[in-house]
Amino acid sequence: MSSHNVDRVSLVFCIFFAQAYALLPPPCDSEIYCTGELLRRVQTAKLFNDDKHFVDMKLLASPDVVLEAFHNLTFGVQNQTITSSILKDFLTRFFDAPGKEFETWTPADWHEQPQFLSKIKDPKLYNWAVDLHRLWKSLGRKITMDVKDHPELYSQIYTPNPVIVPGGRFRELYYWDSYWIINGLLLSEMTDTAQGMINNFLYLVDRYGFVPNGGRIYYERRSQPPFLTVMVRDYFRATKDINFLKKAVPALEREYNFWMQNRSIIVEVDGNKHILNHYNVQIGQPRPESYTDDLDLAEHMSEVEKERLFVELKAGAESGWDFSSRWFGGNKDSNNATLKDIYTSSFVPTDLNALMCLNEHTLAQFHHELGNDAAAQHYSKAYNNRLKAVEAVLWNSEKGVWFDYSLQTNSSNFAFYPSNLAPLWAHCFNHSDMQLRAFEYLKDSGALNYPHGVPTSLHNSGEQWDMPNAWSPLQQMLIQAP
Image (cartoon, rainbow, N blue to C red; front, side):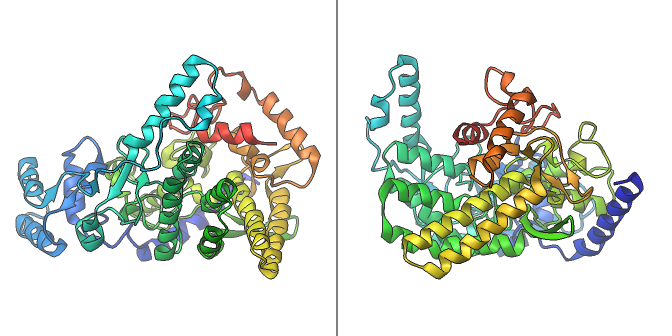
């Protein structure tokens, strides 16, 4: 595509954004945790080292009382600075520290010696595995009933079963992280805890129609890579619990429909139209948990560009790759672009579509297992259509691998990312020579020449999903590829 055409495409995007942003909703409806003057004042005062601290605090009074008190505090000083000490006093009166939404809990199904430990012969690896197994006890969380009874006082989303959290600043469940947590729980023979976590996700689908990014209301309008169907698959393989499978399938179908209705796009290649998926979160405000980061990044931008940036940052967060040169686009080469040039929704990702392909195949298998022949045929047809779409749009026969597809340039992004091989992990390919050629691509890329794993990219942009970092989910996908 010529540079003139690229400029024209970008202009169309800008016009679209200018028309659409006035209608965009906030991250959630809370005028304390997601939008409004209180959020803006507190976050821009930078009272805490991490913006997430404030939006995880519990209210000590009803939202209406807190907002009225804040209005009285700021009345007549809208354009003036409120001192940090006044804001701190206000927070002390009306908020409690994060973490008060949990009660002490230890997984009842944890035990000292799961079988997998006996298979590890190397003493150092054995001790490391023992330490990892013990982490289940320290990372377990149970949400208090007060969150259920008084949800207006918390940013925490209530779920009925205890969870394993990632740790650190992440005090709540997260969607795609939990796929690997659940696999670890199954390896540790903690099937009750694993089932409880999956039941939480089914509960969230019943409530929202999809699984939010994480267990906070400021995440409730964006998701993450849809791993729930694969979680259920792995749990069913470990337990053969057919009754649980029957219970889970309706929610899995509802989540699948959400992605097809809200995160799908038609791509035309060589005169043929294909339905694929992308990340797309139409929320035109800063992320509450990273409020000042987003504002600082948007400094000196026009209002239209700011809102475009905020939309694309949330789509990047939905991808799980937050953030990466993988999503850099616009009129700039990705090697010269920065996070300001993020255009996540303008890419058709290989790994997302490989995962959707795997979900379609798995749903077909589930319905076959349950004797639902018509539904099994429906998902088998969707799977076969996906195979054709992935090959037509994402497969590059010259280089012998799959690439993300840019909707701005109508071309592939030829940069190396481990996700380029995700269709192997998902078994989302039709021809055996694709498998061989993709392995040759991996060897020729130079990405195997690093002693501590395959890097997330070969471009050092300063973002955490780029060189020199190597993220464990991507290593597992590469290792488990056939």
